[in-house]
Image 1: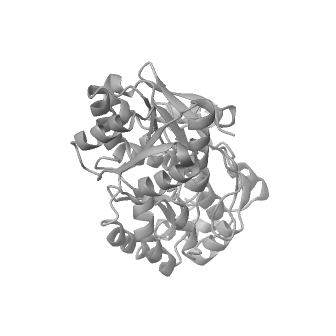
Image 2: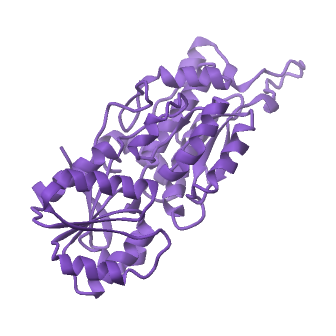
Amino acid sequence: MTRSNKRVRVLAALIATAGLTLSACGTTDDSGDGGGGSNAADCKSIAFFGALTGPAAGLGQQILNGVQLAVDQYNEDSDCEVGLEEYDSQGSPDAAPQLATQAAGDDKVIGIVGPAFSGESAAAGPIFAEAGLPTITPSGTNPTLADNGWDTFHRILGNDATQGPAAAAYIQDTLGAKSVFVMDDASEYGAGLAGIVKDSLGDVVVGEDTIQTGDTDFSPSVTKVKASKADTLFFGGYYAEAALLISQLRDGGWDGTFVVADGVKDPGFIDGAKDAAEGTVITCPCIPPEDPAVAEFATAYEADFDAAPGTYTAEAYDAANVFLDGLADGADDRPAMLDFVNNYDEAGITKQVKFDEKGEVADIHVYAYKVEGGEIVSDTEIE
């Protein structure tokens, strides 16, 4: 597969014009053989941290692909190729500390795109902070992650303190729901988001329930939902459980509107739920792939991966390019990279990327999607 597409924001042309080398990649070869090569041992790496296997692998792979595209485009014009390490957490908070320790111990890794999920972010965050290893999550949305005092933590999208109220507003204002049942999967992400949605909805909530990640029999929950006579169900969790839940709800005769969030925005949801997925509403602080702002990126992505960008692919691409911009600027160790990221203020393809003192971005957008004709399609931006 050829990778002939250039970065959307090409830094190489500026560097060539100034007659500079990419100092972040290490020293050039002084052997006098005329090869002009670099010392590959001194080249730096960025890393992806998230699920590549397990039930949430679909989301993780789409994020990794965005990082891969950014690195490949950067390396086309680099004298010293930036490496890309992969830390497969399977989305498990239990696996995260050991992997974070491994990443922190690799001095060549000077930036992490991830962790991808909120639970593993909470588990790995203290280790990255201790190591001074900057992270930018393109998908971990639990608001409390920014309250731990980790100078290394950054989030390139809106958190659930913005997504939750947006989902509630859509449920009430657009769907006109009169009675809502709220459910979560007990995960750091799912429970946190469902709690925000419940509080935002107020008196229209007629029932709530919690399941466990990995459960497959939701018949007690189906009974509770039907007994509540809710016209709408909001579920905070991931696509594997969401697919089983809506299938069993439909089989049980519940015909209300199923509303979920970004953890369900994956083709695996439709593959698992089949026809039962039809009509599902999905909220996400992720830019639609057909948005003109990401058109050039989407074309390059499709050329490389023979597919349209997925959930958080563009956000991951933006996150990776923050680190790559740092390397191009000469930030070739962790302290320099952390300072660069903390002071970053540039236009990405998804938003203006600038982090506040807690690592949050100010330019936040939340969108609604629907499942129509067996596909996840854009609906509207939620104001």
